[in-house]
Length: 87
Image (cartoon, rainbow, N blue to C red; front, side, top):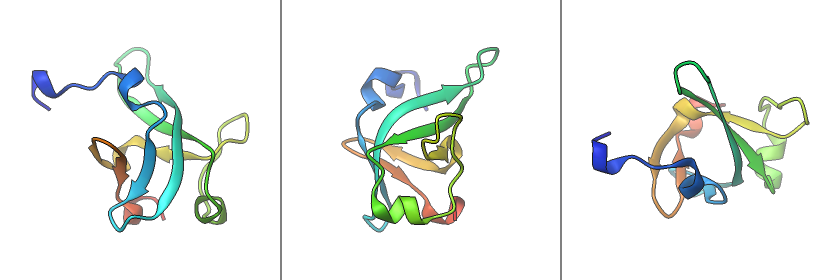
């Protein structure tokens, strides 16, 4: 990403997470990252949809569904993920 394209986490929190085909997963509740490197690791979902809940996704220590940040392909009005990267 170019310098002017950087997004701060506060701009991503609360956005709806959807797949390329438009399936809703929920909203971005939190983002986990590696503190030493700043590498983004996971998106923690809040208000997960029934569709997301029925998938075999990882859960964090609080039981919330998580998605690997590597599955994110775009951030704009929505956070778009590649479903094939997580299923």
